[in-house]
Picture 1 (spheres, rainbow, N blue to C red):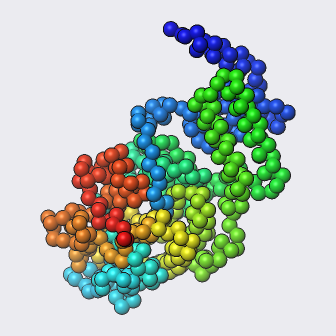
Picture 2: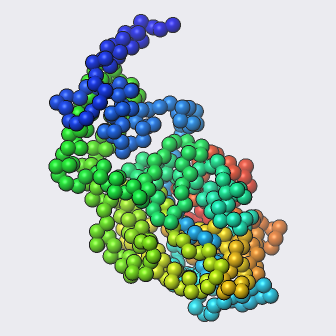
Length: 473
């Protein structure tokens, strides 16, 4: 049964809609209020910066959201760095001093670097002097039991916390989970080398992604020249008047409220000069100049852009990475050219975040597909190995230490979840990418979010990540 009041409102809305044009080719003298269909065909183009789902105020159930919407403020921004190919943990997070029957060190241990402020046995590989100097801001994860030596499966396991030997899972990636709770201009940006984020896998809220190859298009949406800025603002003025007319005619509703909120947000973004904040200048590149000359494919620019976006609070998650770690042959030569400039760039990135007082609110994670064999092969390289390692930096974590460990022939050891120390088999937990994923979710969104990711929780997933989320007092 339709109530008379509802029918009057529907009749008024129908009459109102019939008077409206269905296109917006330019700036007319007057833009009338939009119906739902007209928003789809015109309004979304005007305010295309916003998610259409949010713009239209679609019901949570229609978008696959939880029946009861819960808000999780982002506690830390996330920089997710994929060291693609399966890096050698002996040359990164877990250098060994001596050889055993199954281990070829292949380098001078005296060239490795103690992590500043850490116990003597916590060192980084010879190509990471800068990161080693960061001390309290660095936490090493050693002995990650990967359960696979497949590039696809290992990368997805690290990216989601779920192991599948096909490399295909129906779960959102960790950065996508964090970004989905963000109201930043750019919730997540995909720069060179990063894993493709899985955005549509059971998130509580939809999330939009900006890719590096689309940056020029995205920048064009936020002009910097006065005439272009004025034109965009004039278009928003018409939209604002349209909403006001619609509200006067049919009353306030969720859809009009969503359009009104989107218009206000976009107006603020354009007026604040976001376009210029998406462009790199010589001054932006200056901290990374020492690395840029030797880094292939522009990773130094990726760090410079990530820094600018973070410092201007425009982004919540950055996906980026560096390839070249599938070193089956001539590993020493490959790493000697690959890692030193990366170490310079990453160290500069962390120090610049410190300088701008953004490091404590930014968590940086370095990870890889898996590790590499203890033995050097006949081609002076190392092959795939199902034990890996990772780094966490910044975020006010309690650093200058390592969680987990490996034996002398690079077998994963159990770890004590309370202390993080390696222990005898059977006296602790096996450290896996689940622990890393759980720690990142907890640090960025809080403990309560794990109820939506039970496979990362202590109760349902038996994943105790307390040692990884310990903060400095």
